[in-house]
Image (cartoon, rainbow, N blue to C red; front, side, top):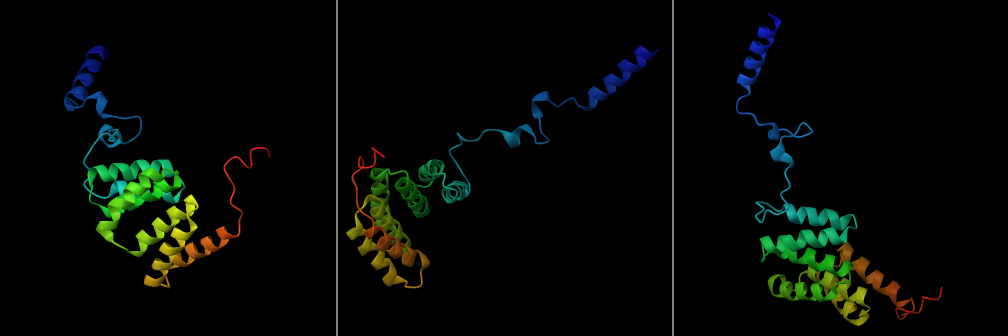
Length: 174
C-alpha cells in the first residue's frame, strides 16, 4: 500500500512540473537565463558599456576600461563618449598610438571642447610633451577658468616641470 501511495504522489508531483527542465535552475536563486554569459552579444540597448568603462577607469582598471570602451566603439562608432573613454584608457596604458587615433577621430566631432582639450593635454603630459600639454591646458582654462580639471592639469604641469627628466634606463642600478 505504501508503495502505491508513493508512486501516486510522485506522479502527481511530476505532472505539475512537466515543462520544467533541470537546466532552468542555477546553483543560486537566479534563473539560468539571468546568469548566462552575454559577453559575445554584439548589441547593447543602452550605454551599459560606457558606464562599465567609466567605473573601471575610476577604479584604476585601465585594461578593463579599455576593453569596455573598445566594445562601445564597435557598437556605436559615432559616440564621442566612447572615443573619449577609449583615448583616456589608452593613455593610461601608454598605448599612445591608439589614443592618437581616437583623438583624431574625436576632434572633428566635438571640436575644442574643454573635455577634449584637458584629455589631449594630459595625454601629452604623460608623454613628456610639456609645451603641447601647456598650450592645450591653457585653451581649456580660457574656455572655463572655474573648471577644476583645467586648474588641476595646469598645476600638474607646473609640478612636472620641477622634476628632472630621465631616460628609461637611469634608475636600473638602484
